[in-house]
Image (tube, rainbow, N blue to C red; front, side, top):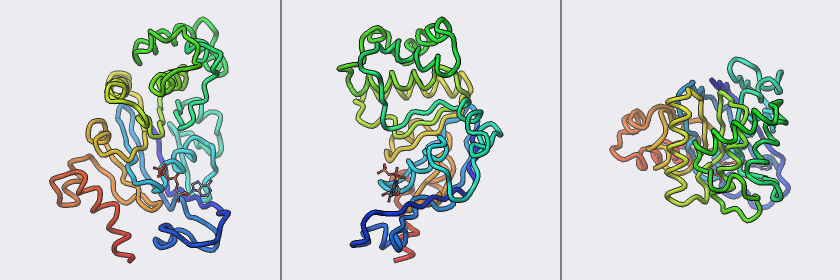
Length: 264
Ligand SMILES: Nc1ncnc2c1ncn2[C@@H]1O[C@H](COP(=O)(O)OP(=O)(O)OP(=O)(O)O)[C@@H](O)[C@H]1O
């Protein structure tokens, strides 16, 4: 279970030229950009929660704070009740994190990449190797398990990186735009794996995306992020109802861009 309570983060920007879109939306002021502004949501066990937002909405920054990579300026984050800021090691041990840079060791096989990461997490080589086999089955990477990562396709790299992130069997899984660059079959296979992890293994899954379809196919709960804020949350049907739209894309546009339209 992941709880995020009013986290904010701003960054000093290098250039102070034209303010750009963020400036017009009031997020870029005096050489600072407010990437995340009081984002709150909670994600339950056995459920898939999607952070849905346009480019630059603040999804990656929110997930990086959850993963302990950035310290929020304000707010609190808890994973299974453990404070990420006060007890980062204990909180991180309960998370499997797939970021945008997959960073596999090219000279190691997929299996060796997974086992090595498992050992870093405190598993014995034998246990990590057994986990690699289980994950290869779940993620359909049996055919490449004993191939060197050098030359892997985008989909193969993503699956290996995901297996590596799950090797210690974490209760919480955090993925930043996991279907980026994947073809339709790889996307469908990943969706199947995420459903199994949530429905059959009770994992708490949080992922970010800007793809409506992804959210409609997968999410029990959607958090709409716009201009650094969490502006709406609920199931796809609840969000359609909230926006008064039959179509989810129309509902997203109404919910995500209404604050900008009001501010303009
Ligand atoms: N390290 C940084 N320094 C300066 N600005 C940053 C930094 N990281 C993020 N930002 C700014 O914060 C805002 C939110 O960025 P973020 O990457 O969180 O958005 P996102 O929703 O993940 O977007 P995308 O879907 O395009 O990846 C953007 O305006 C971005 O330029």
